[in-house]
Amino acid sequence: MTITRRELLRMAGSVALLNVLPTAARAAEVRVHTGPAFGSAWRLVLRDTREAARARALLEAVVARVDVLMSPFRADSDLGRFNTRGATVVSRETGFVTRASLALAADSDGAFDPTMAPLGRRYGFGPIAISPARPAGRYRDVRIAGDVLGTASPGLSLDLCGIAKGYALDEIVRALDGLDFLVELGGEIAARGRHPSRRPWRMGIERPGTNVLQRIVEADGRALATSGDAQQSYSVGRRRYTHVMDPHTRTAVDNGVASVSVLAASGMIADGLATAAMVLGPDSSRTLLKAHEASALFLMRRSGGLEEVDVNGFLAGGAS
Image (cartoon, rainbow, N blue to C red; front, side, top):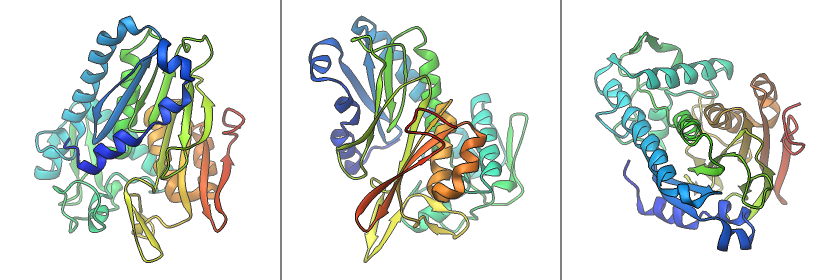
């Protein structure tokens, strides 16, 4: 995927992972390795720095593979072929992620919908290759049978960016099995093992639009995914337009949610739930999150600043 100047600046300015590490650990005990991924960046912190070369190679192989298969920006990817030609044979991995996205779309009553890219394009977001004139909000018209991806709606497009990054995070965790590490992929975080100081790894949640940490949570085997309106958004007058589209209102989300961070068993589920929860807001997302044994921390824009809303025991360490 092509990285724009704005995305490079965001990569350079995002220090949440570094801020979670004690100064001594940053200086002597660990080294943060980083590189580009999916228009953003990956960061890897290892307990055993002797494993850095091997770990980096494994991580980069996962990023490259998922990009080749599922990028809607590439004409030669599974999604690129589907969006250009219609029905096409896809890889096992693309089929798996597509099925997961459709299941989550059904569970959330369309709050998460992988066919919303054309609507996002009308507001200036998403893959240029997908025309804003295409149909949107029709996840029920996507068909996948065996390895054939098709649609009952001519011109329908598919964009798995709201869930494929989480899948890639899960694949990285599997690839690095046996190591002690913390990995961030475009703001989504997972960890295994222990920090060099023997304490659990810690994951940071930034206050939207800043490099200031709002919360630090201990990694416990679950993945953390955050969706928000700070990075990909713009304002016209008093109206803020974000890249997250509400399939029900058919416009950009405008419900007071500045960001939502989700803890779930897998990066893929956390990723998709974060998008759905951004659309639904804290009250309406409670049942969906509980059904997936997930918890969330919402940061709501209020007249006095940001207000935290805990759903399903996020701050207590898990779903309840």
